[in-house]
Image: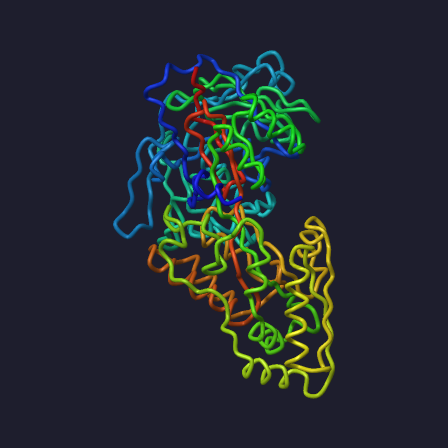
Amino acid sequence: MQKIAFKIISVTLATIIICCSFTACSSTVKDAELRCPMANEPVSVDPQTADTSESLTIAANCYESLMKTDSDGKIVPAAASAVTSTPDGLVYAFRLHEGNKWHINSNHEEIFGEGYETAIDLRVTAHDFVFGFQRALSPDTEAPEAYRLYMIKNAEKVNKGQLPVSQLGVKALDDYTLQVELEYASSEFMQILTEPVTAPCNRAFFEATKGRYGLSAENVLCNGAFYLSRWYSGNNILLRRNTDNLQSPAKVYSLTYAFTQDEQIILDNLLDEKYAAVPLTAYQAEIATDEGCNVYEIQNTVWGFVFNCSDSVMSNTRFRLALVKSMNFDDIRSSAKDNPKQATGIIPPSCTVEGKPYNQVAPVLGSLKYDTTAAKKYFDEYTQGKECSFSILCTEEYETAIRRIIQEWQQLFGIKLSAKVEVVTAEELDTRVHRGNYQCAFAPITTDAQTAVEFLYSFRDSGNICHYNSGNFNTLLSQLLTAGSAESVIKGCTAAQEYLIQNAVIVPLFFHSRYIATNPKITSVSILNSGNVISLCNTELLK
């Protein structure tokens, strides 16, 4: 696996756009029809509620929000034609492109009847964006990303049912001018405006679907580069070029997502140039590079020890500190496959701050230092002469290294400590950790977060995989959400990570990667959400 490091392009931006330059090549294929695999069939493609890679992928290709990320990683207008703001960064005005329409087709005859083409106003207006924001923050919608919009005036109160959606700080000044008023200046605001949760929603169409919005082709109305043409349940989803988006229709005619999880079929179809872009394992990535495919590495996973802080044993901070400060991490690191990079903190490099990779702008934190004297002190303070026992979940490749760590614990702490290893499959490890059915685990934390703030906020309250709940930590997260500059975001992220590390909630050891490969004839592929979403809105196929 050594040569893979020299062939695969390391991608550290969660919103990076891969633009392959082929100026010396012939022209592109007119009306190209592309195919991609999709691991699971989405339940819904409602952009306000999308929370899986599949639903986010369809939403990213079929809906256009106010802003987008360009080929240089900069956030630029999309559905908006121009953006202005007040000097204090609290009031924004977005002027929309005039002439863009919602794409309506024969699918919608099931909802509106024979007069479907003229049943509703198809102009994409500021009112559609107002309704989209209101849906995202209405408590009835239960949008998983609603909290990320709390910088908008009254957003949190609206989301918690304390104010009506009409009090949200978003309004249409006229048909093509949208105003958004913020509670506080936020460095995250423009980023969230690139994402599906802030996509527009046509109220008349939404109400006509009678609770089925986003659940089938006839219940989807698109304003993006593609529109959803056909949804064959159990088989595939077909997208087609949306010519009603005058500024940025798709550059290929169609895009089909075939539902499959067969890794060999996915690799074979990529190598046969039947698939445009696919996720691969590290081993497959090496094969793909040798065959001339473009392969991109996104470091979106941090491996380390995680503790279930709701467990009666692991809930004690001193006990966790005793274990962590007496760990020798060299054996664990040497057991890892594919030569992973040592973790510089908890946040994976795929997460960004204002478009820049977090690990390139933030200080190195690492893990707690080895200190057996302090470890023995913490252990004695916790046990007070009592015995304690617990188990550690891990996969087979790390079993030997963890047994060595347990032996070192027993030599240091004596017979008062009893620990055992429970070896499970990678699938069972993931399931048990996320369900809280563990005490301690050596496990991966994989994210689809775009930004460092979004990643850390997933640890709020006790809903995180460590079931950790700390008022002090939640205060740090609240301060992080209101950070108004990149410098304050980095400072806040550093403080939040240090808190988790110093309290032995998570022990970050190394980063692992996700791999995305593209057909060598494909240009301009956007890799989003830490590699979990691929947008082909600007993609072309070379002859």
